Length: 226
Image (tube, rainbow, N blue to C red):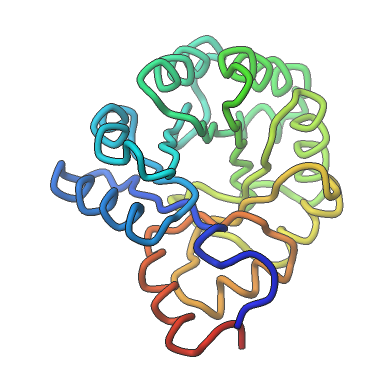
């Protein structure tokens, strides 16, 4: 059997496809409840429906802010986060202002994150998506440091919509910077048990994936971690 936490307790079951229908959301929430995933993450417009569907299941509802490009004004991201919380979301995944980070505008990056953190009261988990495929290693480290200074709970690799997803090297780098106190979420291209365990071994303690059910079924079929 797998060592450490049960794998389903590491998964954010994510449905952020552009074409996701109400039926897709209902199915995703049913899977989340059945497999006891940590979070079901949906687009903002589906938050209230997901909250109703998952009521009493113990599964948290998550949504996004500044998704997928991160280029909105800080007050817009903050509004999105606040409205998501108001509607029942308990996890907010915001996207880094990647252009500001690449430009060295670190004060702008910090203000952006701080605005969303202020919109997320106690008990709300805030994750920041770095979209690591666009950053060099120094930029990734600095982004993690700024995120920590602004009170972010998790640093996250990717939206899953960029040209690259999670890599073990990026997860290790992020874990090295944030240490054991903050979370590291790997997301983007994690579709099978081998990739899941690779990211966990690298230091991820949360996995964002749209294929959580298939991963858990594969793990169970092989009786744990290879």
